[in-house]
Image (tube, rainbow, N blue to C red; front, side, top):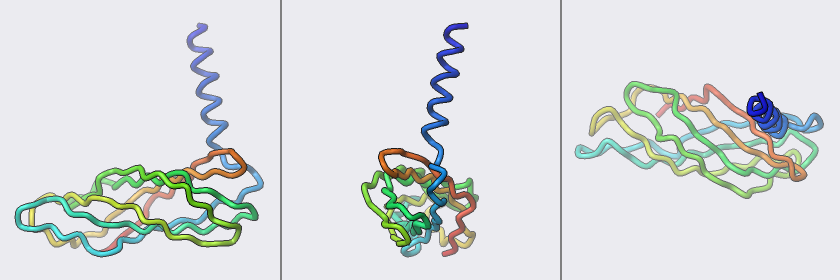
Length: 143
């Protein structure tokens, strides 16, 4: 019983610390690829930089702490999950682009991507020492 109570308190604390402050508007975010991954004839991996654009719609400065990019199970190719740490401030009303270096993995060497890529972004923000996360699902990239 005591162990369950401790687990419930820890879970409640984790959920409470992850919520956005009520006086902070949800930031807008989108992702775009900076180029097309090139899968050579002998490899099924290719580097691809992702540009994550974040618009601060709040009246307070936000700090971006981390950006996690997860691919949503594509057939031809996918992006290896990555969690990139940042320490970048976005002033109230500003928009900022941050680069996340990623690796694309294809189902076969020499692939020319033709299907759109679906990604999910999980971004950790900080405002006045409080960290919260926002999830942006269904981010679509077409090469």
